[in-house]
Picture 1 (cartoon, one colour):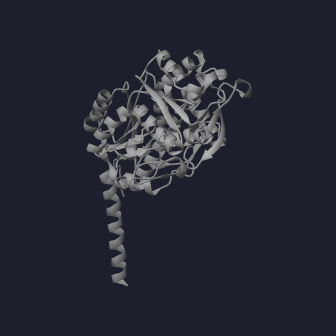
Picture 2: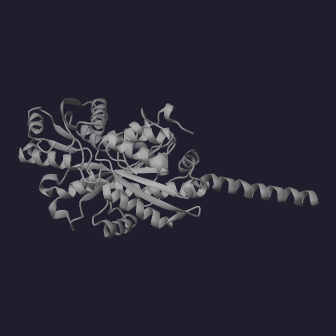
Picture 3: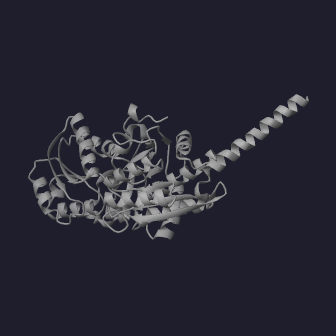
Length: 401
């Protein structure tokens, strides 16, 4: 009996020391520090920007403001959509200011530069708003978590149904940087694999305000569909110009990445009826409406999908730290991949070993003016796209176990 008691006591002491050791290892700088990096005042400010800062702060507050008995801090910066500025800020954060993870991350060119810095320093990238699928393919990393959507899901959700419906000839107006290139490439593959063809493409610099020459080229291309492989203010400007030149009356114009803020800014007589793919919509059910109402009260507008995603992934990250007993990146990532996200945003969701968060996506239609019950009543959900159908398969070289 004495031997049994001694063994039990030894086991208990060992367990206490193991937990204490894990927690001690996790007390980096006596806090958890999250950086929010995004375009805060440019063409992409509305789709993440200050709204992502609001969403992350809401997550921290809802979590209780502390984890493992230590405070959670949030810092933010404007990357101006420039990779050199973004990577320099993140290097300063992780090397001098004790930042443990970075979220936001909008322009894919910036995210590409930033994830290299984070991987080199074994810190986690919580990618909420970038579209390129590179971060779980050719630029995959054991420290990347890509949450909200990507170009593969957009192409599978929007392009394939249109090609299947007989829209075979496509022309692209593409944002001339990593995101636009990736979206055009993936969408072109979907078109060709389903019996369609790409009859032409033009590339417009980020922030282009005069889209007339691009629209005129599209108009003379003989395409059935003109695909806008851009986003934010670039999408709004190119669609408005398409309408002014009569292109929307001649062919289908497909927005391949349309956020609620951008759809809301458009005349429903121009945009009404357009179908697109999104990872989130505020008016899906009681859960989404409740969170979105709180967000709007704080931020002044309904959330874009990247902002909702920033909240969701921040909560998942903090819960993983709590369970792991440490903020060590390798340990936390394992817990994040072990546990399935399940909240107002993440439906039928899991985080794959490559860092891709697979979840339901939604094919929606922009409502016409006479369908809208309020200024925020923008989308009608037409179809739920299961995550395994929306996102591409995992590459063997990115299977970080």
